[in-house]
Amino acid sequence: MTRLNNEVAIITGGAGDIGTAHVESFFKEGANVIIADINEEKGKLISKNYPNNTSENKVIFVHHNSTDEKSWKRLSSKVIDEFGKVSILVNCYGTNFRERYINQNLENWNTILNVNLTSVFIGIKELIPFFKLSGKGSIINLGSLASLRGSEYSPAYTASKTGLIGLTKSTAIAFAKDKIRCNLICPGHVDTNFIRNNSQYSPNDWTTSINNPENYNERLNQIPLGRLQTPQDIANLSVFLASKDSEMITGSIITVDGGITI
Ligand SMILES: NC(=O)c1ccc[n+]([C@@H]2O[C@H](COP(=O)([O-])OP(=O)(O)OC[C@H]3O[C@@H](n4cnc5c(N)ncnc54)[C@H](O)[C@@H]3O)[C@@H](O)[C@H]2O)c1
Image (cartoon, protein in one colour):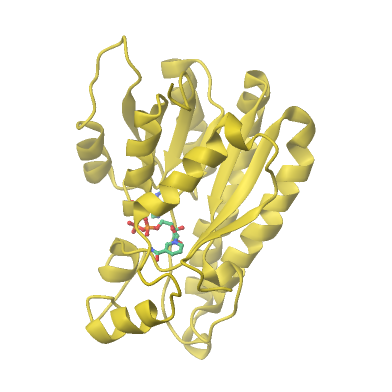
């Protein structure tokens, strides 16, 4: 028995490292999966790893910019055309500029709030009517250590990720009567592109990247369970939160951080 048989799951940021682990896990559990990401090249490449025959569940890629309301509308139309329904949304996109509080300008503040928080609100509003038609829904947002504690760096990242606590709880209470659940996963330090490499939406240099052994060890030494998290650690919890096994769990803030916030 697979836990997500016949389900349809949108993984936004699905071409990212945490997103890719979700795509694989959700597919293995029997779901039809939509990779929705701004990175077309990578998204298409990942979707090609999956079989494309009609008798099994499949994985498709849809180009998507989470900050754009029209892009969410195109995404939902495409998903309904292709699969006829949808009831799972995992939001795995995000952006951060790791600069000191005093150096963060309004442009970067707005970008971070827009991508990490406002986009999630737009997406949820777009998909709720389709979840209602399905008679159920599971929305999984990705917070961070920054959802739970302050930092002298990037106040916008902290504000956006703490904002997701409020948005997750509001979504959970507003739509509980429709059997639509919403939970927030707060990962710790996950070894991904986001904190290792330099990208447009998550710039890193030697002072911030975990390619720098000093930075890697500083993070590692804070983790009681003794290792950084993997994308799979996060996907494992998401599969549970998307499945019937968690049908009484909503509005919850759940850490996957090796004990760092104890
Ligand atoms: N890696 C970590 O240590 C860590 C820790 C806590 C939380 N998180 C959160 O996990 C999420 C995913 O991070 P990751 O580590 O997989 O990073 P990643 O860089 O591997 O993936 C991020 C993905 O988001 C996509 N994306 C960026 N902006 C987008 C937009 N506007 N519209 C659509 N897609 C967009 C990128 O193309 C990329 O595929 C983020 O929300 C991040 O804040 C990561």
